[in-house]
Length: 595
Ligand SMILES: *[C@@H]1O[C@H](CO)[C@@H](O)[C@H](O)[C@H]1NC(C)=O
Ligand SMILES: *[C@@H]1O[C@H](CO)[C@@H](O)[C@H](O)[C@H]1NC(C)=O
Ligand SMILES: *[C@@H]1O[C@H](CO)[C@@H](O)[C@H](O)[C@H]1NC(C)=O
Ligand SMILES: *[C@@H]1O[C@H](CO)[C@@H](O)[C@H](O)[C@H]1NC(C)=O
Ligand SMILES: *[C@@H]1O[C@H](CO)[C@@H](O)[C@H](O)[C@H]1NC(C)=O
Ligand SMILES: *[C@@H]1O[C@H](CO)[C@@H](O)[C@H](O)[C@H]1NC(C)=O
Ligand SMILES: *[C@@H]1O[C@H](CO)[C@@H](O)[C@H](O)[C@H]1NC(C)=O
Ligand SMILES: *[C@@H]1O[C@H](CO)[C@@H](O)[C@H](O)[C@H]1NC(C)=O
Ligand SMILES: *[C@@H]1O[C@H](CO)[C@@H](O)[C@H](O)[C@H]1NC(C)=O
Ligand SMILES: *[C@@H]1O[C@H](CO)[C@@H](O)[C@H](O)[C@H]1NC(C)=O
Ligand SMILES: *[C@@H]1O[C@H](CO)[C@@H](O)[C@H](O)[C@H]1NC(C)=O
Ligand SMILES: CC(=O)N[C@H]1CO[C@H](CO)[C@@H](O)[C@@H]1O
Ligand SMILES: [Cu+2]
Image (cartoon, rainbow, N blue to C red; front, side):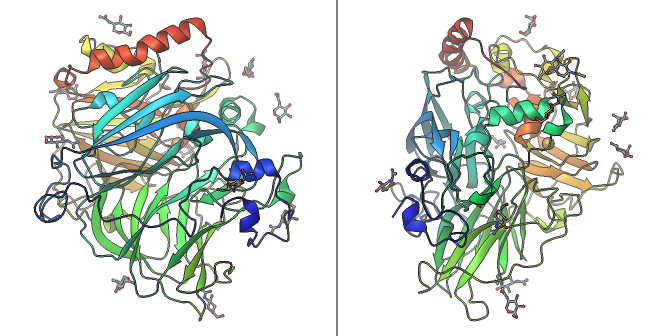
């Protein structure tokens, strides 16, 4: 069933060369199985550890049980990841420099029940050239395990080439998320995958069709793109993506290839549904830079969770996701205009927020008995107007199902985002005047263990000590949108706008929206707040890979004296001994901020 010959049912088949070069076929075989008709479904939960009540978490009411206090299941889910380079051709264009996990792109799906332990052994086989690596488990709080957060220079040294390291942490919250490399812009080379934690559901549905990953796709090596965007040559700054993939698939128009790179037919992702049933789709923007606008022609979508927060459901036709954001949506398919083959899309009319040469990613939805090879003819909803604000949905629409009142902040800081050119002509982002620069050999947690809390300016570290709740007002004095992501916490998102915040008005103070990623508008303002209930050092950064490379990153430190000290020394020894040895005998070409 795999290989391009089997997938010739592509609308572009007549436009692209009918042939599929063997190397393209081989590289295409690495795309994972989600989005194929044989993909199967996800269960409601993993069934090998039920507690009384028939579920792993017992018989609880998700309206009244704090989703941040997991049960203890005593179960460990083990994964073994080997990371290596390999060629990829998810869209038919042969990209030589992909980064794969166990030979796959995107990486394997991690599944666990709420409260389980997840253990992932990561072996770094990235060669020619060598690179360090580290994996971050996006959205998981690492409550009591800050050292497994996977950020080089903060919670660990990079995993050295040839070395292995095992992460072990609790699935302390539930819902849809993903994991990705936090070493330079490696994630943009393909080093990411879905992560699903099953938990109590506040809505009813029949089937879970699993992750639907929406990603921009770049034919150039990430290293080259980072060099270009940081250079002082303005003709190299734009770097629009080449294609937009749904579950790693979307045929590329090979007639656009002018340099002789092998390119062949590629399949669309396909999904089959039964009318009358309700499905759960786990939407994930796992891209590098572009916003995604998800829709299915003629269908209503009901958003039931944003990031790892269940919300009061609301209906929409288009789901907006900036990089790092997830939305769980329910969908009860219906035939449109009598047809049972329908386009799924991720599309915006303009190109500013998507930053894509080909923003119109598509996949095929087949209902009931529609033949496997049907090509839909349905029409898209009118696309939302690309007015340049790149805004998320209005904050009032996100009402968390488990309610929490906004506490009074015990301190408030402002962060101003600017762009600068440094003395060697590199384009950088500054946070309160300072671009972040990692030191791979000297992780913050290792220093905190030694009770050293004073660091170089370029580590952009804010120590909030024993404050109870910190409010952060962010002003974007730059023309780019910035999906701001916090580690170790959810943030209350209190304000989002083009106008300067008035200093007091917040959205729904009795139960404000909570999520881990929110888009800061170009030249706009955003206000967020989080509670200091997880001792550690937590990154807060823009999730656009290139902006992160350009230094748009701060560390938020809390209660450093209360960080559990027991694991830190062995953790630092495991990662830093190998890395220090490696970096003392090899030149580490750190072309960017490092994270
Ligand atoms: C692609 O995978 C299929 C089976 O999964 C295999 O039969 C085929 O030979 C592979 N093609 C190449 C070029 O590796
Ligand atoms: C800037 O990049 C363009 C495109 O690669 C190149 O043609 C031009 O020579 C570069 N300019 C400088 C000053 O390096
Ligand atoms: C494919 O690309 C070629 C060359 O740029 C263009 O002429 C053609 O219109 C494109 N086809 C589609 C369907 O976009
Ligand atoms: C939302 O959509 C669902 C499914 O299409 C429908 O049953 C429900 O009535 C809609 N709710 C509202 C408020 O429109
Ligand atoms: C259904 O048909 C009408 C009339 O031709 C058309 O305007 C509409 O876009 C079609 N809907 C879809 C989802 O294709
Ligand atoms: C400018 O930034 C680049 C990239 O972060 C860095 O490598 C270089 O050392 C910086 N130059 C100076 C003078 O700080
Ligand atoms: C541009 O950057 C290069 C190094 O990347 C540097 O040699 C050159 O001086 C810079 N030019 C300007 C005008 O800053
Ligand atoms: C704390 O660590 C920083 C970074 O390594 C170092 O520059 C500084 O001297 C250390 N401070 C103390 C008191 O050891
Ligand atoms: C709270 O945070 C501020 C920085 O915003 C810091 O100056 C202050 O010392 C912290 N308070 C406590 C009790 O740690
Ligand atoms: C805002 O950006 C402009 C340049 O775009 C700069 O002149 C100004 O100083 C910046 N303001 C602040 C407060 O950083
Ligand atoms: C971490 O766990 C403690 C104790 O269960 C809890 O009070 C706190 O809210 C948790 N923090 C986060 C960020 O989950
Ligand atoms: C409020 C404010 O100063 N806004 C400015 C932000 O920066 C742009 C230029 O980068 C100006 O046009 C805005 O007036
Ligand atoms: Cu950004």
